[in-house]
Amino acid sequence: MAHKPWPASEPELAEMRRFNQKLAWLPRFKIRNRVTPRLIQALLRVSQTIKRAPAAQVKRVNGVPVRILRPSRKPKGVALDIHGGGWVIGNAQMDDDLNLGMVNACDVAVVSVDYRLAVDTPVEGLMDDCLTAARWLLTTDEFIDLPVFIVGESAGGHLAAATLLALKQWPELLKRVSGAVLYYGVYDLTGTPSVRTAGPDTLLLDGPGMVEALRMLTPGLSDDERRQPPLSPLYGDLSGLPPALMFVGGLDPLKDDTLLITERWGAVADVETYLLPESAHGFIHFPVAMARGVLAYSRQWISRFIEAAPYAGGKSS
Image 1 (cartoon, one colour):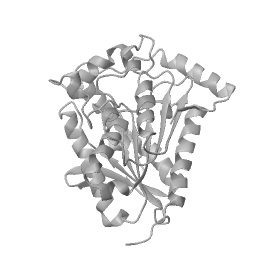
Image 2 (cartoon, rainbow, N blue to C red):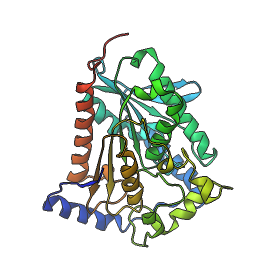
Image 3 (cartoon, rainbow, N blue to C red):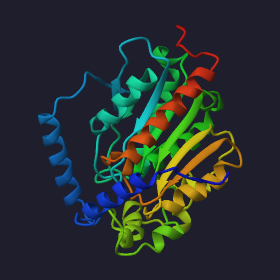
Image 4 (tube, rainbow, N blue to C red):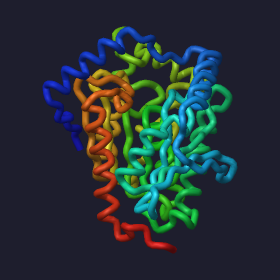
């Protein structure tokens, strides 16, 4: 299935261009060593101690920490959220605002995975954490009758797609996943054409350094080994995967990751993909109308699938 251009108005495009001018002054995110991610992670945790967080349950499921936000009434569905951060920074709490928006708009519970980070753990360990959390969510009594969605952003998009491929080992669990919402994920750890040709004017991400960063993420592997699924979901057998909604920005070095996986996933399932003009990596966090429109559409998409599900409304087991 081909991607579609996001229907942005001229005022929305102008607003995004103005925001891009601000982004151009910021340093690009780079993965060059283990020290910088640790410093950024420490600053993130300090900022989170200052900001008031919504009520959440934090627990360990089979050894993996998760953070659960619930609606005030019985949930109609549940989403597994996998945060971004280049595999080396971030935590479940940093998605609170986005997840709370999903909770309130869709009447779903959101389980966010606090997976280990690649500064200390091979990327395969991060994938194992996300799979463990997914298997728990799909089998625990609390959510057993609810439609399930997997949501991932950037590195979290990679981990979400890898999780879905790994779930093919348990077909009955995979069938319980109603849909996936993926924002500008990484699906080829050798670098798609748009990654390999990224110029110095990339916003937010260090485009020219991304191929080397992906190699640093997977030390000791050849490119052929990096292409093996689920490490690189683009090359996996996508049959049996659920419907998906995907977004990527036209200025994102990772643009081809989303467009290429759309072609393969769209051949076996209903996939809806939007290319956002004038948009850089990470756009759902930008204070602009296009970002708000994308988030609103994502939540409407989830709600439509919930209403169409035979168990919509959350029957008790």
